[in-house]
Image (tube, rainbow, N blue to C red; front, side, top):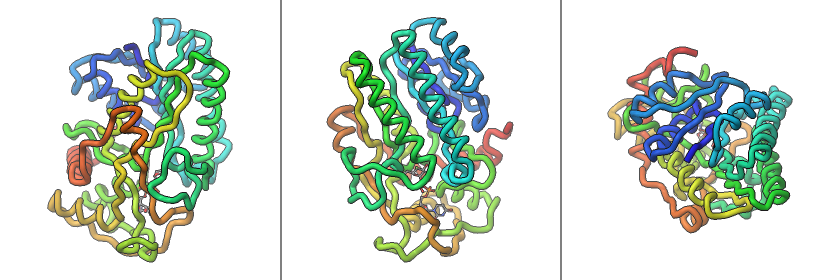
Amino acid sequence: MRVLVTGGAGYVGSHTCLALLRGGHEVIVVDDLRNASIEALKRVQRLAGRALTFHQFDMRDGERLDKVFAEGPIDCAIHFAALKAVGESVEKPLEYYENNLLSTLTLCRSMLRFGVSRLIFSSSATVYAPLSPMPVDEDAPLGCANPYGWTKLMCEQILRDVAHANPSFSCVLLRYFNPIGADSSGEIGEDPNGVPNNLMPFITQVALEKFKQLQVYGDDYDTLDGTGVRDYIHVSDLARGHLAAMDYAMGHTGCVAINLGTGRGYSVLDIIQAFESVNGVQVPYVIGPRRPGDMAIVYANTQRARELLGWETELNIEDMCRDAWRWQKRNPAGYGDK
Ligand code: UFG
């Protein structure tokens, strides 16, 4: 298939491009490289031994996007391009709403104009209302704690409405849990800007001794060891999930939300321990206060992904820790060109 991948140079995007190329698909990436590196795409092509097509522009530029659609028939679009830092979204809500909503609207307009009807959307478990019972399934109440989350939820609603109004449209909303790890080559991985917000990139940078220690955000949650529990999923498993969703979209119309997680929760201390033992490195930490907005426990009900996509995860927490560290150790400055 000819697949348009928006935000294809980012963390999940680049791993998905690699899986697509390895699966024999033709890949067209649109990315403005605001928060990503062209080096990621160079490495993806080297690893796959195949070329992709790259266009650098902001997804809100409808004219440029139309030209990409005009170059040849697109069978499916996978929409990753978005701003994604939770804290930043609280400080700059307008930027988040403008960017994430307008890019989705622009993509839908071009798709409809060119008769492209299959769309895979990069959503997030953050759309579930706080206090949802765990494991959370796709029919749980929705609601967000920050503007980033609301942009994902609003985009989901836009896509539901577009699918409703266009009966040939097929849309899969993939709700990711906590993607970590890297391709097993150690060539591509997560390359956050500045001080990492998320647990695994912070751990790998503590292991590199870029930071003295990790701060564990609270040990007084109602969990086995008191620290927060999340459903960590290997980014390569997640990437495969997009190919399964594409296959599903080929045979179905309408709009469906699907969780992509493992269905298992690990605490912050579990992750530190697994990382230390699998990699033989120390991750010094201190217990700090809770981070505002954090939930105690989040993990997925994975039944719908199994039933509709025939997809489940294959890689375990040791694989995730090993691959995250291999990437970071080999690339201490990430892609190094930002
Ligand atoms: N944590 C720490 N110290 C850190 C960073 C994180 O203890 O330095 C803890 C958090 O408190 C939490 C766990 O590690 O218990 C995971 O935190 P992350 O920041 O890695 O991930 P979150 O679950 O907070 O958020 C992630 C994505 C969001 C997405 C959400 C969906 O970052 O974009 O999952 O559930 F919306």
